[in-house]
Length: 88
Image 1 (cartoon, helix red, strand yellow):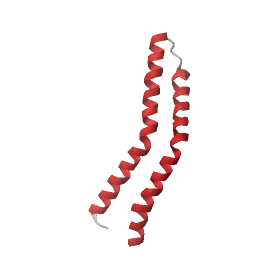
Image 2 (cartoon, one colour):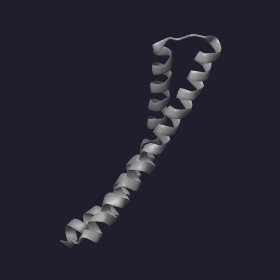
Image 3 (cartoon, helix red, strand yellow):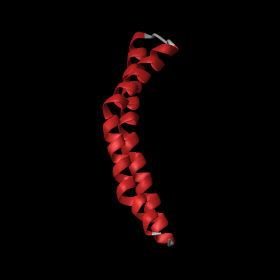
Image 4 (spheres, helix red, strand yellow):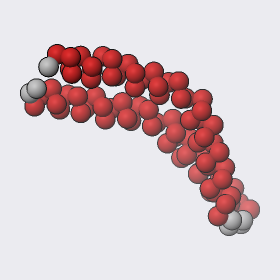
């Protein structure tokens, strides 16, 4: 396997990781900003107020996007990794 193939596989794998993690990271960002604004407006500085809703939102989005993540990984392995292994 040449260096170009290795770099191309690494680039594709990193791009897949970005695509898969984007929904969770975006929800965490939005939830953090909304909760931070709520805390600033109401002067409530409770630590669990920032943690619990953010985790709940991330779990909900993870549950909804689990099929997208799984199908993306399966497609990547079927089209990139397995032919590379089978081809030698």
